[in-house]
Amino acid sequence: MSDDRQMLTEVATGLFRDLCTPEDVVAAEATGWSERLWDALAGSGFPTVSVPEAAGGSGGDVADACALLTVAGRFAAPVPLAETGLLAGWALAAAGLELPEGPLSVAVGRPGDTVRLTGRRLTARLSRVPWGGRSTRVVAVAESGGQRFVVSAPTAAATVTPGRNLAAEPRDTLVWDDVELPEDAVAPAPDGVDPAALRLRGALARSAQIAGALARVTELSVRYTGERQQFGRPIARFQAVQAHLVTIAEEAQLAGLAAQVAALNARPDPSFDDVAAAKAAAGEAATVAARAAHQAHGAIGMTKEYELGQLTRRLWSWRDEFGGERCWSRELGRRLAAEGADALWPRISTGLLA
Image (cartoon, rainbow, N blue to C red):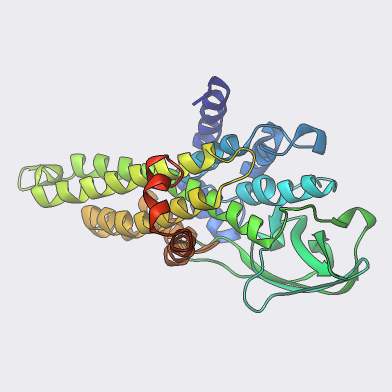
């Protein structure tokens, strides 16, 4: 890790430690938002890391943004940090559109979603939008007249139906009914800016968040089993519990390494192979490690106030967002199969496949 990135993560860790305690997360789950945390992050420029300074961002690259997201995942941060910079901010900057103030979100096109653009008039229905109702704009890609456009749709002009994921994070449905967009809200999408690219970035973001959450789950499990006494000794000394701890640590390391490789290789944009491997690994790790952690913790791990439950509910939610483990494994397998058997070993041995 570079010195600048190390300093970035250290500052972010201190901020989250102060403003994103388990008690803060409980409070945010009740309202769907932590305004105090968001204001502190925005004041530090963290939400727009990886967006060029010339476009109104904080600069840095994809690896810097993913390092921040890993820290955010450790603390179950209830804010749209990934959506604002790495996804929406990237699309807006690439299209030459203004980066608005406040939190942003993005829609990548789920089954049943519709986006129709006629000139600057938008008719759309977008579902499961992360923090959609809390964002100032929702960024999407629309087709019109055979051309692709980046759309920055004001949420104030939409009808919002609130929704939540398993972790009580907002996943809202927004509808725009023949709304005329401002002049600074629509621009032609350059090559490479499309729903598939947004989905790839979203998968990378969730991989980084999962890696951070798993690292914290490992710490909690080691600490709890070292303190919890049974039959006169810590339960961490029992072989069955040790097996759970090994499983958790192994899965956390695997997911963390895969996410880090995908982030570091995103120069300037994420690689499909790296992200597919990272998201598949993260999804499997989220399932296996969460199960082992709850086995090691017993009943306390299921309580709402205890930190483990906050993290594992996010692991279960994030593993399925922007494509789940099976989806990415299938897509990656098809690509590799299309290249032929002779290409597989060189791809693995040269580090092109995480």
